[in-house]
Length: 442
Image 1 (tube, one colour):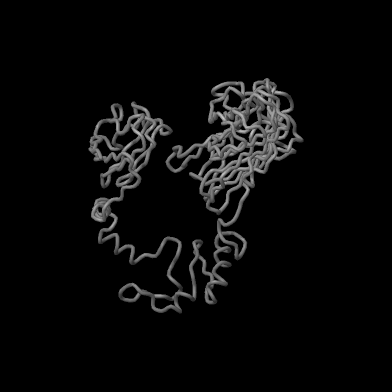
Image 2 (tube, rainbow, N blue to C red):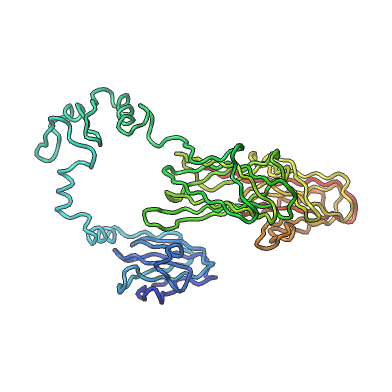
């Protein structure tokens, strides 16, 4: 463990982690002072999108793949920071927490007295109720006889709480009687088949949507009308906390663009909300074709553990770039991502298949009727690397041994379409390849 003292101004921050250090835990050991964290050596407080704030007695685990610089939020103070390689968790001692509460004035005698004599804002004393010595209500009957609402009126609460309280809460908050507040699923945005989003080649459509619930659900069906060398659509999910005016999180997904509105490819996504506002930027990466995007976004009270986006079989996706690819059968929602079968595959021939969208670990098995050496590859379809889908970054390249049954081979797929290729050995053979995903609980 190392100890650093963060005292330099934002123009000359101290470096806590260097790229290549590996997983590292950063702990702010100060009771009251925050520190800025940034990947940029010149911290700019006027660019909050480049900064994170580490709270007093707070910790942060980083992967150690990028430089991390720090400076105090309050100029002139010195903040002690612990740097723990391979650390996972660091918890402040009870003495530190007590000292922090005292330093922040959260437990003064005057404040506690005020809290004892005042109920929570919006909830008044029951009618005709009085305070006894020690702060207790005169009787339970007085408390249950009447509840003052946030609007100042009174609603009777004399029956079984489990029967009438939901009704009263609904009436107070303007919802239907008996309906729980912010429970269930609520649609926030829809652009349907009758009026889809129309995004020109290279264009971007930005949706700004507020969220109140812990989970999101997205459904989309994009398409173009003609052939395209690299038909992709980018969904850039940027989460903002409007109370501080700063970005909190971002995840970017890519999906292929079918070249027909009658195609069967649909995109389904879900995940945890990261802040109270989503800025969704949808970019058409096609060079010539206008994209039509049918999309619906909901919020849900269901707590979802991870971002999980998938497509069904992209049956009408094609590329005008040779050698082209085939669409395998499968059921990605049942974790069979793809099932590829080639009868009588010619010697030394190569086949390509486009997998449905799925981010996470998959296992690939290869069966061949002739025990011979062959080649299995998985590449990501990334326009950042190449406009040619087949020239994307390699995720897996395996020389299959001279055996009929091979695998499983593990590979982690990113948030973008991926392609599988198989090059046959020196003799014609029947080939069967399966790709299976791993379900994540949510």
